[in-house]
Amino acid sequence: MKLLPRLVIVLAVCLIAMALPAVPTQAQCGVPYIKLSPNSGVPGTEIAVDGQGFAAGKYVDIYYDGTRVATNKTNGNGYFTVFLTVPESCRGDHIVHAVVVRDRADARFTAKPGLTVSPTEGPMAANVTVKGHGFGQDEQSIELMYYLNDNYQTIQRHILASAQGGWEASFLIPPSTKGKHKLDAQGAVSMSYEVKDVTFEVTTQLAMDKTWGSMGNSIAVTGSSFAAYEKNIRILFNGEEVVAGIKADGQGNWEANFLVPEMPAGTYSVAAEGEWTGTEDINALSFEIEPAIVLPPDPGYLGMNLTVAGHGFGANQDVVIMYDGSQKAAATVSSEGSFNVKFTVPKSHHREHQVTAEDSARNRATAIFIMESIPPPVPTPTSPSNGGWVGIVGKVMPTFSWSAVSDDSGARYRLQIATGDNITATGEFADPIISVPDMVETSYTLNATDALPYGTYYWIVQAVDGAENESAWSEAQSFRAGLLPLWGFIAALAVILGFVIALVRLLVRKRRYYYE
Image (cartoon, rainbow, N blue to C red; front, side):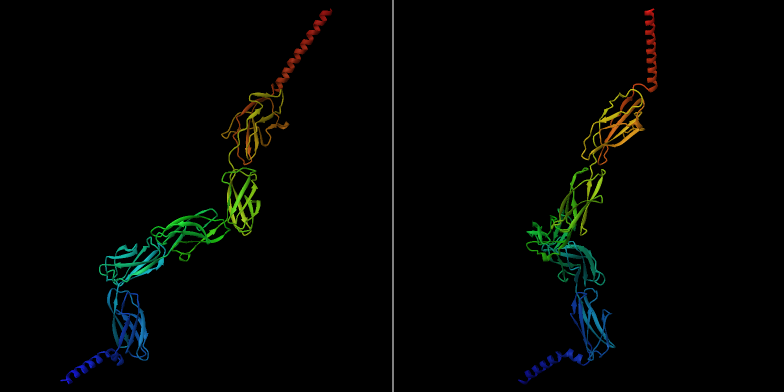
């Protein structure tokens, strides 16, 4: 009775012993065998194919669903290891087999759905591409989801997988706080819990509306993907605080402006930090301070002292100031990159003029000076008076006089004389007989060569300032040169002489009659 239980126990042990070494025994006996590590995963996963029991020193070909995907060689004991990347394939089991001459062994790889994302990190609004792998063959109604505000939000719908279970979609990262955000997907066959998700890390980002400027310029800075409602954010220019007390919104975004500080020309860093965000979390931006000069905003005039203020030049450099290419002043730049100098505006036309400053390090800036364009007042003719006469007989050399005018740029005068009052559209005589330009006095006497014979004449006068602004011409004034023409004067003299002679004769006759 005791022998039977013992036999049962011995038989059971033998059966277990035979079952445990079954595979190794096959391998040791030369039966081809392969093992996959891992034997399941998302297409694109790298797996190891270990083989044994094959012919020694022979080439081995690895096939995935009948397509050769790798080649290697067995060692002297018939062993090999091949690494391969699982090709695109739909969910489910796929046959992997190894062939060495006539030896063949199979294994199964189970493809599971999963995602990949490129790039894996970046700022808000970054354009990312998500690829799906291992979904169902031609699977429909796939949705792509982004984890935001403690919940998944669908960002793409109606995605269709290929026959190999792959698909692709691109989107812009929505406003998000900094850190990692999951991406997941689900379709008509593949459930979200089955899909191996991925993460995209939103990085904190700074942006400026300008990357260059001069002292006093207002620069807009935006911060994105800081911590939600992060406080005490400040902007740093070259490590120094220029704005403080900024607060982010619920998405970690904010906007502020700073004024470019007074510093020499060069490249400086712009960074930011807050309660939970350090400068090391952000890629600092570069800002170029460029030289600039500032002139008074209003138009100027000839002879004024023009102030030139410079900023952003080379520290302690010599600087020269030019007006329309001609040097007018020089100065030395301060250690902060600024200078202030004055020069007298030279004679120049009413228009824009270029003022340039350049230091010895070739930092250069230009500004525009506007010479005033206001015409001077119209001078008033005073002599000869309108309708009056000058001289008695013969050619006359009258003196013309007019009122003085006042102008910041100084004034000079022009005189025209004509025999008629034919005026052009611009107010001057159509056919003047005498034109006298550029007089600084308010009177002018004709010389002998311009003496006027008997007749009626008209004259006008105009003022011109130092910036070549012209007044309107005065209204034409008329005058007569002489009382009689020469022939009339001679005739009058003849008449008078005849009268005198006749009178003398009459007196002589009377005297003779009296004495007789």
